[in-house]
Length: 112
Image 1 (cartoon, rainbow, N blue to C red):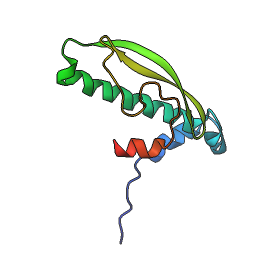
Image 2: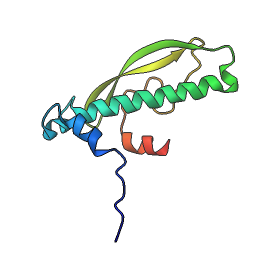
Image 3: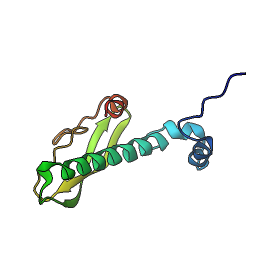
Image 4: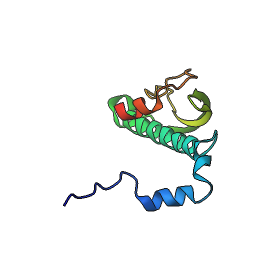
């Protein structure tokens, strides 16, 4: 008898996410997938900022809010909040400064 592999995202959570509308609406522009992409991107950028501030370069440096940035993805435009630091020394790797196109979202998240 084989054991079933547990899903990476619990079924209950998926049911809650999809309860707000039809499953096909998740794939529309500004749908559930775009929202998840925004949340994952912002969380990864915040993790990069934490790493930056914890390193030697971050001595005496602190967070200084967020800057809004609109990037073009494979599914359309996405507005994200990029963390800033007081010394302006934070240069994110996921979405570099002045970068406006964000192709290969999945590959970049996996590589981190």
